[in-house]
Length: 576
Image (cartoon, rainbow, N blue to C red; front, side, top):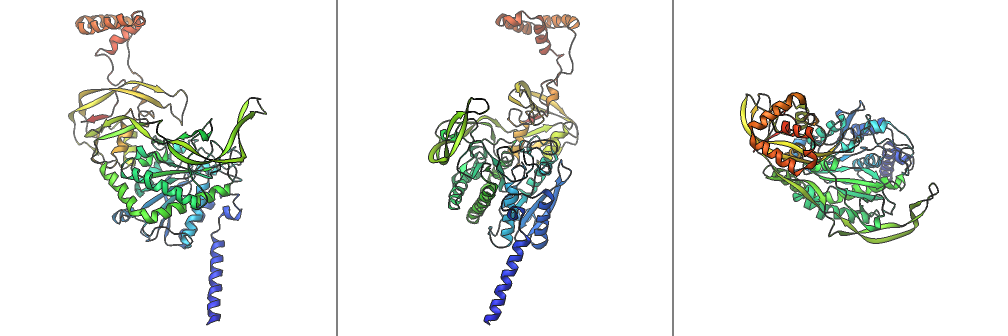
């Protein structure tokens, strides 16, 4: 009997050793110095899917690289069916890796963590579903090099920040210029996750912490999910990570200054991954490992963060699902939505910060003073952290929006984001609120393929419009209400207007020859004495205007029936 027990024990050791060798990652075999190439990553997950029935790997749409975007799903029950997950109130956690492939910590940590879950070394909640994208920016990952992350310590080779068309994918979640973004949106709405984690690496200052954390801005997320994240989940992660010897700190949002003076929370507007996902009330995080730590430290810290999440999910999974689902349901009846959140620079919270003393010394290049951190002088201090934001704009939702069928790019984006809408079957007339763009500023240099608009001002007008068969109605009684208003209300900072979807209305298509219009304008003013009186008042108040004949003629044209209707007239209408 003792001999038999010994044989069983030895066989178990052999099987365990074989499993560890079979599923060892390049990160591990290189002793934390290397990260695998793209095809090796996909083959690794295919191997796990072949060997474990709890894992499935799926192709989920194209990317700019020409290669498909993969999704790996771990489901203990083997359902792999989001509808069943929803019916059973299961927690869905969605992890994104390699959006910036020069920051591959998530790629390696995810491979090891999923393997260790499958081998029984790590535990996840019984009811939880884990879905992860192995590499989001495939084109950037294929563009391997050892030089483009000048401040980063390892790995030996890594990918590039830009994708195959040189887009920064973490600015593309609203404007959707890339196939990557379009595929991501389809995956996101197929999964409908309750928690989203997008893994990054960052710099900005030097300090002792290996892992820093962005939680999506809690005031913007709002609702029950926002309160739970801010009051319970995030503080719990700080406790868990300290126990694992990787003390957390909020993302050190310091550029050109030193962190001991305190800093403000990073505001993840909807152009970013976590800002986009939070529009649908998903609790969202962006872990930012510190690039000046060794690659091994960075990956190990993210692995520890995965463990920390699971410890809290084990306890709170039903609570998280309930909070998120209730917030989504509440958006159907919510009357007013907030936009353009601004920092409140008062009443900071105090955080525990582990830093290095900073100072200035002459630059060996310029001779001017330059900042440096002295790692031989660590310190611990309480610093101010400003994490309160308030909306600068609130807008009541309409009963519905009208999207004329010619704006098919808008229609395509709304439908991809699971916005419920329908085409009208016959021509009709209706009263609507119409916006006219009064003013805006445009970024003076290209930004991710656009000249972004901001500080957008509008005036409203009630008009009777014609609705053509085939135009689209978007009713505002759905879970996607927050997303719909963010993209269709032109004053929102990441609206489709801000991202140049409607720039054709900014440019006038018709005009006049002054020598012809002078007589028409004079006759029109004679026929409309109130308008002539307004012109004279403006001339009296504005000497420059009074001295500019061309400006006066243009003013008359702008206030005349000859002025083209489409110029500066926002083409998406509100039915109140």
